[in-house]
Image (cartoon, rainbow, N blue to C red; front, side, top):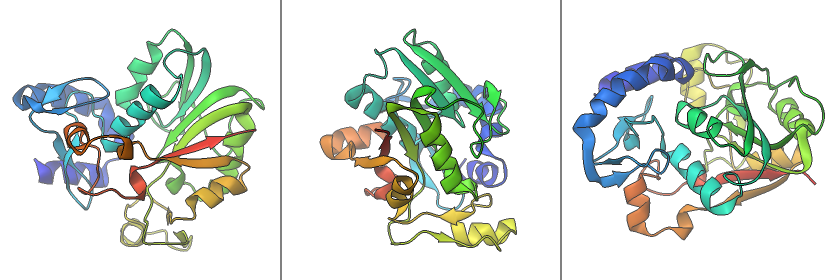
Length: 261
């Protein structure tokens, strides 16, 4: 199972995998019924989560019921415990929408919810984050998870998020972070997928963000903050919800929250 998942995730973009894999994995999930793990997104109780990862294989990462990963279960907890996302009347833009969220967010009567992506068949509209086709101050909330590391013009894209966010609005702009790097590493002369995987960790990444990621968000105009939800949980809850990426907390296990004045 680990080998198959690794092969698929390494060479097939996740946006396409999500379209068909949920049918197969929901059948597989029957064999994972238990009470040791619990998905915060779908509420399913399991004996364990599935492994996931392109190069580094992470145990207890993927929920076979809703396809949530560690980062999605963490975002759900943040939205539930730290925001009014599930109760307030909000106009929301969700870029590169994840399968585990789409139907659940669309079902919330308080949200005016739009999904967008350049290629994903799951999205409502075709959307290029370098030039977002909405007017200034359109949205109360923007969610964009693990997308900016794919885009050469990341500052331009961050500025577009700032532009379409209402004053007083907020967003979650999470990206993979290598906390061993103080400064983001990028080299746009590297275009070969194999070389990109070697340098940036994935074949379709164009950079590896360092601890200066929040500085980049601030440069785009945002007030930036990191939310450490894991610190507020017991070790037993962290283990049960399957939240850590490599059995220890890293910079990637934070919520990167942005606000516009």
